[in-house]
Structures are given as structure tokens and as C-alpha cells.
Amino acid sequence: MNNIANENGAKRGRWAGKAIAWVAAATLGLTGLVLPSSANAVEAGNGTAVNGASQEDTPFDYYSDVTNLPAGHVFENITLERLEDILKNGSGNYAILIGGTWDANVTKALPVINKVAQAKGITKVYNFDPHLDNAGDSTLVNINDKNNKVASFAKRFQQTVDDFGLKDIQSKDASQVVDLPTLFTYNKDASGDKVLSVAAGADSVANEVTVGTALSAIANNAAVRTNGDFYVDYYLTHNSQGQASVFKSGEQKDVKLVSVTYGELEKILQSEGNHYIFFGATWCGNTYATIRYVNQEASKYGVDHVYTFDTILDNTSGKNSPFHIRDNYSKSATGDHPLADLYTHLVNTYLPNLVTEDGSHGVIDSTGTGATRLQVPLLLHYNRDNTAQLAGTDQPAGPITDEVVDYHGARNNVDTKPQPTAREYMLAWAGTTYDDSQIIPGGYSITGDDLNAAHNFGRTVTNDRDAYIAQLDHFYSLTSLRGTIDAAKSVPLDGYAQANVDAFNTAIANAQKTVSNKTATIDATDGAITAIANAQKGLAGGNTGNNGNTGNNTNNGANKGTNTGKTNTTGTKNGASKNAAGVKSLSNTGSAIVPATVATLVLLLVGVTGAAARRRVYAQHASGSAKH
Image (tube, rainbow, N blue to C red; front, side):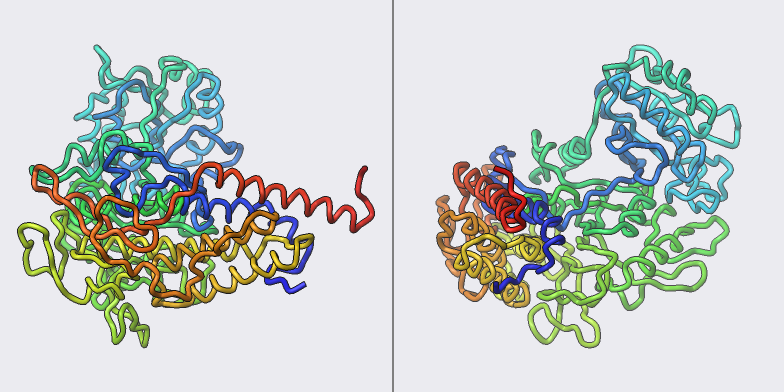
């Protein structure tokens, strides 16, 4: 049998279930009721998405290595910005643990707190580490130390305690803000003390009785505040007059952004699997302009986790802050910029193939060691075990498999010898970027190489914002196609009609051609994903239909007419209208992927599941062990 899939029967059996789920997920993500690139579904408040999980998005648990702490625990690691958001904006009762997993007293207490919390109906305990690098004795940024030599560090956490009425957790030790670890419950709207109960110190926090007493204050009545709540509420209250909101009320459940701390990011980079990493910050105007689209395209392709990291560790103090790890080390007496070592360690250890505009001068740490300097916002895809330059990208070989950057070279997006040069997308919310001479009143129409269709993978765009969306769409589509191909190769093909097997193998082969073609359009990569799913449906005896665009037709998506509000099933939707306030509405540049009906999706899943069952019966008959 001519079979591209792995011929090892045992391996096929182990991977069959995963492969079926992955390929089906790809189909759901691309043909379901997703949030399309045009963003109009989001603008209308639909918020309904039928997305499968992306095989290029590996789940991660910060607490997975804590002894005796089961999966499905109640803990969520949070940044200082998230902590202050809960204290300021969270409605209801919250359970909060102060302390880091570098502390043996904390790791001893975590299973105890988890057991008691679950018994009392508390589903979330928020964990904040005042060592903002999540390190122990070697920490460079301990904001719980009131004697810290860096004055800003010594004052920062005390400011939080004072601003949000946390005097009941204040340590009696004048050198510390709070005793570590400390577990407390909190309600900002409480008529008296906002701190409802406290268990402080190693012995209390690891004792079921004292923990039970503390958590009884909010038993069966604890609130949850998600990343979605944080991001949507932040941007609703931080938009300049006359500008559109980044997110709209009610979109909380659609947010795929997961804010992470420095130590959390490092553990993600150390972990196996595939991860989407977004360097961005709420204080950054360029992030303000791009974060909606980063999230929107993630949702379209079934990505549930875009890990978002702010290079300013307190998240609020601004670009010239000593909390900023991306600045050169300062040897001044006050230690103005003491954290460059954290940045050089992160980049040189985990991101050796990072490509940015500022790579030549980089960031210099306390030892004189330099590292490539990135600018925010920057989105990348990461796999620690990757050592090759992947097909279809300009990314040099290494663990970063791809970046959303604007490559400049002899050819569009290509200049890999000896090293590509690139610019991060410095998009401004009004529709301008680094290469605009000015914001043009009216339609923000601009010209230049960055706006041609070839550079934007088949999309015809009229402004840099739309060009950025096209780059995002291609980035997510390409990584999704690679994962779909890998999953499809693991599907066992024994027991199927040869014609259907041949069609399936052809779809994989065509997809491999597409993924290797740097000029392939977004419609081509999306079409290759759909073609594999259709061919897999055909394995089960269903109607394979048209296998779609296999990547050889580079003209797919060439319909460049203005969007009139009708779905264009063969091309792109271009153009955008203004709202009554004169603010340009969100872009209509996304792929016009035809939504499948619910019945089609059900048939696909039933067909694939039935095929798996038939293969099992076939194998039983072949081995003489079938039961009758």
C-alpha cells in the first residue's frame, strides 16, 4: 500500500486518536463559525466560535512540577498588574496567596491549600510572587524587601498594600512588606476591612485547620477574574478620545491572551511542545494597536494560549523604569537599570535565533554580555527542540520557528544570507506605522512595498494595519498547516479503499508543497488544511468533494474588489468603512473561508470516528481475534 503515513502499526494505533482529533480540529477552526480576519463578527458582538484546539498550541501548567499537587488544581500565577487589577476592579470575594514556588514553604503549602479550597467550593486561588523574576535567593527584583538598594523596588509592593487597604497582611518585620507565604481573602467592596481573613507564615499556610479557617470566609462564594476580564476592562477604560476601543464589552470569553511572569515565561521556554509567545504591554501604544488582531487571528486558528509577556516587570512604571529588563545595565549608585542580566539570559539561552531591527546593538548586561534587542509588540512561535529552518519561513534555524516581523531583503520577505534583517511592526492605532510620513486624513491610504499583494500573501490592502493583519493571518495559517500535515501523517490507513487512501496521500503531498512555497497565499495554506480534512472525510467513505486549493494555485484569493457586505467565497474582502464618529472601522482583509454547516461538521466527525472503529474491526479480523 502506497502510504505516506508511518508504517509502524503500533505507532499508528497510538497516534490515531490524536491525529483524528487534530485534523478535525483544523477543519473546525477554519470552516466553523470563527472570528474571521475581517473582525466584523467581533464588532457585531457575535463572539461565537466553533474552533478546534490547535496542535501547535501545547497546554502548559506552571505548577506541574510541584510534588503532591494534582492536575486540575486551583492555582493561577499572576503578574503584579493582574494582582492590582483584581484588587481594584474585581467584584466579589477573592483568595490570594503571596509567595513563590522557589520557596519550599510555598510548595509544601500548595497541596494543602488546594485540598481545602476545593472542599470549600473555591475554584481559583491567585498566586502572586513578589520576587518579580520568580527566583529565590538569587532574585534581582525582590519588591517584598523594604531595604532593597534600588529605591523603586523597595517602595513598589508597599505602595500596593497601602493603595488597596491591605494593612491586615502587613508584616510586623519592618524589613518586609508581608510575611512569606501569606494567604488572604479579599473583597474591595467590603464595608469594613477589605481583607476578610489571613493565614500568614509557613506554619499557618501549610496547616489544614488555619487554611480552612481563612478560606471559610468565602466558602462557596469565591469570584473568578480571568485574563479576558483583565484585558477587556483595561482597554475599555484606556482608550484615547475619538479612538475605537481595542476590545468590546462582552468579548471577555474570546480572549486567548495569557499574561505571564518572567519565571513563568522561562518555564514555558524550557517546556516541550509548541507555544505562541507575544511580547507586548498595556503601557505600549504599539501593542495597543496590534493586540486585538493578535488575539483575533489566534481565535480563528483555534489557538487558546498566546502567552503575553511585558519586559517591564511591574507592568506599569514606564519605559525608563528600573523594572525594565530590556535596557542596558546601569552602574549608577542608585541602580537605575539593574535588570539587563535577566534579558540577556532569556534571549541568549532560549531565543538564539531571534531576528529584530535592533539586533546589531542589542542589550548589554552587567558582565558586558550583549543580546539581540527586541521591540514590542512581537509575536513568535516557539519549540525548544526545533533545530532546523522550517519550510516556508525566513526564520533562521532554531527554537523560534517563526516571527511576525517585516523582513527586508533582495526579495520580498527573504534575505537569509548571512542573516535576515527585520523590523517589528510598530503599528499605531490610527493606522500608521514606522514607515508612514504622516497619518493621512480620511482613509489613511498609503503606498509602498509593504502594501503590495505579494508581500501580503495574496491580500490586497490599503494601509499598514491591514498589512499587519495579513502577516498575522499567514503566520497562524502556516503554523497550523505544519501541524495538520504532521497529524495527518500519523493517521493509520489500513482498511480503507485504495482510491481514498491515494486521495488522502495526495492531499498531504500537495500540502507539503504549499508549506514549502514562500509565495503561497493565505488562501492556499488555508485551502491545504481544508483539503486534508476533506480527504480524511473521504477515507470513511463520505463524499470527498473538491479537495480545495492544494497550494499550487497561487492566484487563489485574487479577487480584489471592494467588499460590499457579501461573502466572497473565492477571494478576499477588501476595503473598510467609517463609522458615524469618523473612526475607521476594523479591517476587512481576512480570508473569506466558507463556513460549513453544523450538519457537515457532524458528518465529518462521525465519519472519522466511524473510520477508526472500522479499522479496529479490520485489525481484529486480520489477527483472527475478532469477537462475534
